[in-house]
Length: 122
Length: 122
Length: 139
Length: 139
Ligand SMILES: Nc1ncnc2c1ncn2[C@@H]1O[C@H](COP(=O)(O)OP(=O)(O)O)[C@@H](O)[C@H]1O
Ligand SMILES: Nc1ncnc2c1ncn2[C@@H]1O[C@H](COP(=O)(O)OP(=O)(O)O)[C@@H](O)[C@H]1O
Image (tube, rainbow over all chains, first blue to last red; front, side, top):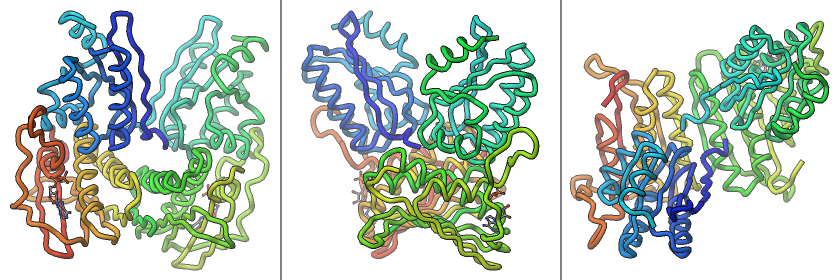
């Protein structure tokens, strides 16, 4: 049932990395909700961000386009964006749409945080 | 997407209460999967059981009938069964079908375990 | 401008109808609880139609209707099976776990309890269950 | 004996089609990954049809077909809008985030990448996108 309604939560880890957990349908509203969370974390000074998509099974190209836009904005602010817990289909979509070129894609949160940390966190 | 495929996991708490977490569609297969988990815990000696339905949003009367059967079996073995984290609609269905007469219904896991413990655990 | 579904007898196909109820209900701004009630009732009606509908597909329509100034989500489930006499179906009574427990026969009872208005019309070859849930009202 | 859906333009109605693909794919024993790919492709086709289909409902059919001894899940999405010339649509190229990034125009590209066989037929008043995903084969 309501499981496809997007739920977004954010936290800033002790090392300054901002983590956004999003589950549900990433359509235009869903993509916008993630983008809003990115903006909020940016305003709070977090420029290294991880989006955890466990719980997201279905997406559309409009939602992913919005993620591309926010990625562009983050890169302009010299920030970094990574994703983790993508289903194979979502990972493939990120590849096709070029998101994977500019954002790290990691299997899980630990791997992602390790990689983000080792290359210099916030 | 696949979120409606039933997932069942079980654990036996230190005080002997068996906890079954089930999420997904409780249809005949889903109800049977819960019933099988109850049987397994019974065999392992756990007669006080809690079924946590967080993650379950949709059910049908066949699935609930199977829960009624397993409840009967558990009562015959002098066991006890409780449920927690039901949506209002599922709680209502349990009322209508009479499951709520023989099994405790609790808002969350803590409340349920408190109630089960205070009336004598395993 | 509602949703119309033609569903064959395959496992879990009733979830397609549940999803249609969810999407329409959300568009109407119904509460999650009311949407879930309407979805579960629709699932039950689909299961009956699939079980008794013979080999032909069942038809599900999910619409918004206005009756006497009040708006409802309306789900209709139609099958083309042998039909039955709705008045002859005993309401599943208070369940008794021990003894002659009513383990089946809950579908129509649940539908009536979960929806605000229910109408069952049936004759050989055409059974139509019409269910309505009010928009913007709790129960 | 496939699923047939008539969907009006309401938010998220494409999820009803995704659910139909999921139910049929599970019945065929497809892998979760293949089911998801087919569902996302179907969602994209529905979004195009809903966007360009004018005011009439779109039609979605999800079936099993056998072509040269191989079984496929087939999703067809039909709309009755102005139509377009599929050959005139430039494939969305390698995305460039900076500069003239292709932020839209990914629908047909995704459909082609996620499915095994895709056919787009369109004339004013009838656009039909036919997509197939092989059963029992990874990609
Ligand atoms: N669509 C239908 N076509 C024919 N008979 C039906 C239909 N729906 C219900 N019935 C009859 O009414 C009885 C009660 O239905 P219901 O309350 O849904 O319980 P259940 O289906 O669990 O037995 C069924 O056993 C069946 O005989
Ligand atoms: N069903 C359709 N009816 C009419 N035109 C369509 C249809 N599907 C696609 N098109 C045309 O093809 C273009 C590219 O479609 P697509 O690759 O899905 O990208 P997007 O829809 O994101 O622009 C659309 O902008 C539209 O002009």
